[in-house]
Image 1 (cartoon, one colour):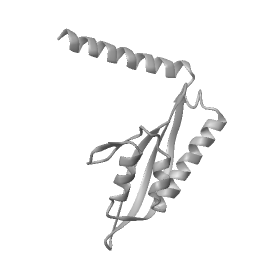
Image 2 (spheres, rainbow, N blue to C red):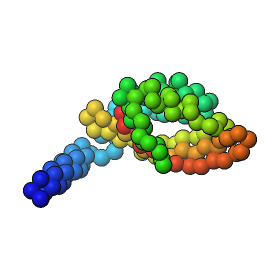
Image 3 (cartoon, rainbow, N blue to C red):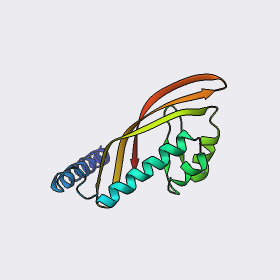
Image 4 (cartoon, rainbow, N blue to C red):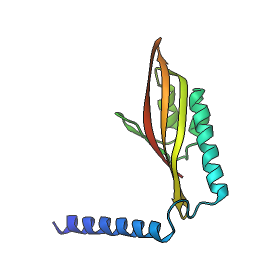
Length: 138
């Protein structure tokens, strides 16, 4: 009981500190320079173009060595090798892909992008599609 209260207290404190830090820094894009924003948009475009082209090697190179992908209705995978393996194992080919940034923000050395995407795939002649949301942390 004491241990769980300590964890709850620590978690609450961290959340309060995070909110406080965000408020003190003046909200949107407070610590991101124009160069940071440009680099994040370039990385997003590189990802979008590679995904649209089914270029799994290029996409994988955009991830850090210790990157983690949390797949919808699937497993969590980590690292270049596992990420590339997951991309290559897909039974479908992307025929259309689009990705839009909804929000970019950051504090200190951490930035994030929140966005949406849409896709159309061809799976052995069956065309289907969908939409999704993502968060990328840099």
